Image 1 (cartoon, rainbow, N blue to C red):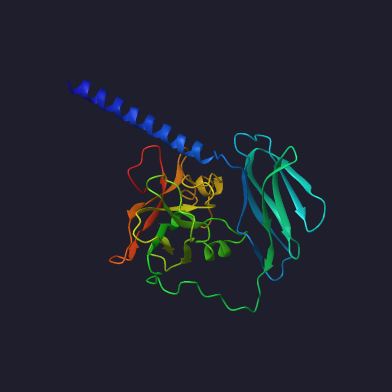
Image 2: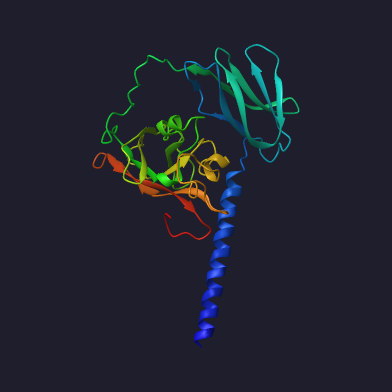
Length: 295
């Protein structure tokens, strides 16, 4: 009887693992599908050092299921368009130069599907650091949610620059917090969250945020990375989901095989005159096929 119970227990665990894996694969697949074609650029405008003349921009696009052979083109200033790649969806790193204006276009059979403009700015060597738009972690606009996003230092930081220090200094630039309508699970397209680095907490990096909310309306508050054009699904860019980050423990800077980066802490909140503010904290972790929380 005991042996039979052990066999059934292990069979149940295998079944749960298989179901969890199917759910995870479904999440990743749905994140990579979008009805409306799009193309956007990470870290736009591109900011370069005073002694540099060019930088890199990461393009992310998806032509959707109706455009599996979509093409990416670029127009520099008023010059003719130049072909980059024929690929229905993907990412691409492009070099951009100071003083030039770039328009990256997604098209199919000469029909424009989407486009994004990219500019390059040079950081002033004598400029004083720009103060954060929100000066203290306790500040919030009326009717708002704020809090923090934290993750283990061993995980590293998003490689937003070719130098480790720049990536550490800008470790919050890839994160954002959004509000979803609980009835439709669609994002509320209004104010964007403001992010800024905060003092680290022991073995954790910390980012603070503030997000304005509509009054007397229940919303679901979530944390994500990258672009928000795919909400409520995560940005499918491997840089955010699965690729190794920098500056951490090499053995922990990349999710294990079959896992992705995700966030705990999502909550339903309502702000009104009686309770005009709310606090929601998040933690980034590696979502394994079966996971009961941060690892």
